Length: 122
Image 1 (cartoon, rainbow, N blue to C red):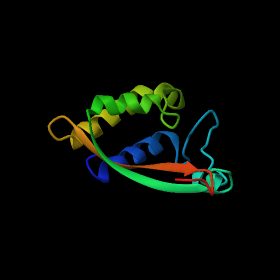
Image 2: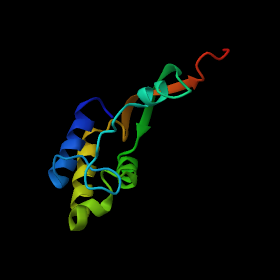
Image 3: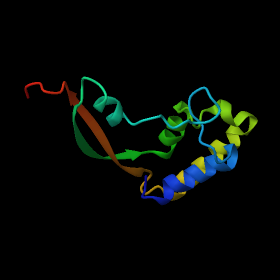
Image 4: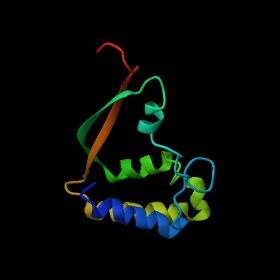
């Protein structure tokens, strides 16, 4: 959103409130998976894998970013406890300061993995 400084600053703000360890799921901390999706597919019958990257630009209103954060496992309100309102106020100020014309632009690349059974016809 708005280039690299916005996600970095937002991540730093979340870490200021929650600590440096990334949160995710119901556990306190995120755990890297043992192997990637590509490795899982390569080890399966669906081992003929192609990657298809798609670039997407999306406009986000600062309020929508706050709503999105509420829905994630890494910045859900319960993690902040009584400090959640203070976090959201600070995050909104940060996002508003980077918004151009009331919105932030996210530049993202999504990679779609298409897998077929090895040796099969295309």
